[in-house]
Amino acid sequence: MTKLIVWHDGACPLCRKEIALMRRLDRRGAIAFVDVAEPRSVCPIDRKTMLARLHAEEDGRLISGAAAFAAMWRAIPVLRPLGLAARNAMVLSMLERGYRLFLHVRPSLQSLARRMEQR
Image (cartoon, rainbow, N blue to C red):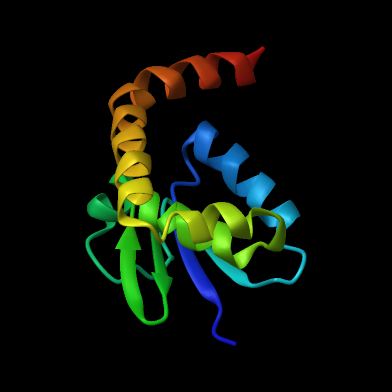
């Protein structure tokens, strides 16, 4: 079985929390997590592009956004039903719209999370 590779922004407090949760749920070790914020990490495309959205490689294909989340969910048994539901184009489209909305407010949420971390 080929491992799913997930590239994430380890400098983002929101991303760190999300990935920490995914690591705990990934009891089979099916996902290789790569911190793109780490200068030594290997990126298949431009680092700035990788930092802007969650990316994953599933079955040799580079995917991003909601599709990357869905691939991650499929690799984790407890979340697999969500990932399988996202194979439906309409479901994935709705998830992608939600993800794009999140990206719009992400900078504000990051600032808030950083302030909370400092307390």
